[in-house]
Length: 111
Length: 413
Image 1 (cartoon, each protein chain N blue to C red):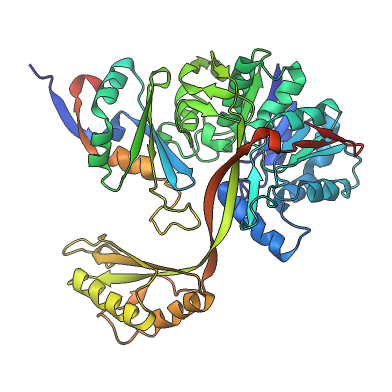
Image 2 (tube, one colour):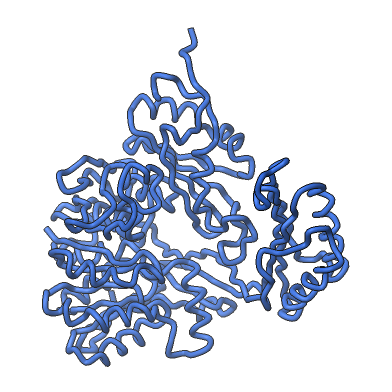
């Protein structure tokens, strides 16, 4: 039987911080418990991240189980860097808060 | 144990932080980061206007106000505020006439190898700073060293670490990474800001032990919070793969252990390994000129309004180099004018300064002859030059990393 889940913003259980490195953005996402991390690690694949953030192009994903965190590098999102980029939020400061606001199905037990 | 504080995470951070950190409690060293990729470009443009500039001028004003206090309390100051001109900043600090022993670190400027660049600076490591402190400096100012080196250098000098004490260096690098963005470690810009008092976070402190482990804390009575959550947030800022390369050591972020501590968070377990044999170089070149404006599109026919103004501006200026973004922020049948409005952003990027300026005129000339409800959020200006950032890599051995000691002696690091 599939555990019951609720459709809520990812930020209900996850924190995030994002920033720029040249033309790439990085986006760290973390949760607070081991069970939440196991769910996050399974749920938030590169494909799923791209569904949630359709503006993302090439993405690398790194697991940091010791921090209960995932780190994504979004290549080329910022063009030639902050001074040149015409993107809204050229330093990707709020990319993490955008991700946190996206609605996903989270198991009730983790909420 | 050595107690290292931070009073700046960027050029423009809270001016009073230096005073707050000196007055707020005990410290051995006070550090400040003033250099981002973008800052190097800003300083590069300063230097074009006046070769005597190129350093973070607010830092000099902060020292004018606080250096006597730091000397009196025996707190060493270590900062990368030297930017493109650490020597000039060191001289300016000498000229404050407070008798401080001032040293500087240089050798990062590689413009001779990248003549097309406005700025070209290798990310140097911690050992130049350590040399300066070992020679008795009260103040060390550097050019482009890695942000974390501002913390690693003082710890390495204090404990007498060797160049191959990888785990200790990695531990201090992680502490440095936590400190380098100031209040981002203590509840600033923090996802769970509603759970703490985020009004005025205190600046962070790392209490580093001989093995490189540390406790992240802040002065008593300051705002914000230091928790596993706030420290995790900052550890994830501007990183890539878990093996985080630096000029002195590769720090393995997947070995970091965080534990709550009665004064903050304890960091332990960090593993280090030898650094790559190349140094990263931050290159900024002038890319051309840019200008932008935002048209407000209110109510009905948003797409058609956007199409009209777009065709008009492109007819007047040419479409080349224009980027358009329509933000559909409008709501149907809205009960405020703002909520009824969408925003159409347009930016021009061009090699021609005159065309960037002509963009303003072309936009404003539409004011009585375009879509109904035409207005802009702010009139466009004359346009500004913009930079293009690139990273390059050079062999470590090809870079002459120099510590210029308080007595003027130059040490090759």
